[in-house]
Image (cartoon, rainbow, N blue to C red; front, side):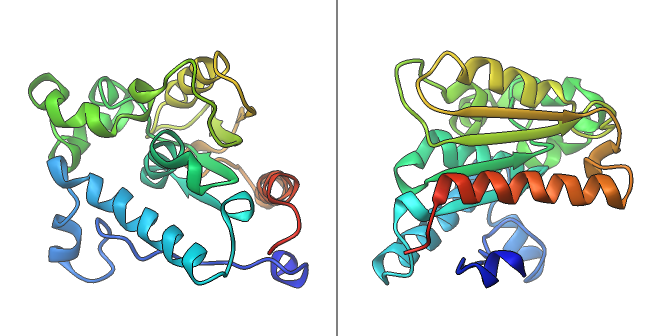
Length: 206
């Protein structure tokens, strides 16, 4: 509510890959078709810009867990569309995800890196970072005790991004599991952290 009261705009992008519109909607963006989810997000961004709702310096995106994979790909593929990116408890290394924590149970969703790296590498944010490129300002958050997406995904991504120009911020909570926070006080802190970062980077809405 505070974001809207200060003049901000909030958009939910209904991209392919989720279960909101049935099994077919989900299957439209699994395995080698995963890029469709990213392309849907980029189409929403283009629409917002084309209709003068916002502009790239004032447009941010936020995603967690599988949405953190989306956030990572938005960062490395289309930073030109965005003024800020937030990735929470994100999945980012598609080469080793199946070797960490619950990752082996997601092979049907994404593919097997040992067999399917040809298409997985196309949407593995960690492997698409170029040292000389300047990316949109980004905040990655994770939890030391995440039992689903290993915090190593965010740690490695941040380490590699810090060799590039631009702003890369990182926060790791030592509690909280995959939710990133252990109680309401921590959840309030995390929300404040995220929205403060976005407001500082995006500034006064267009």
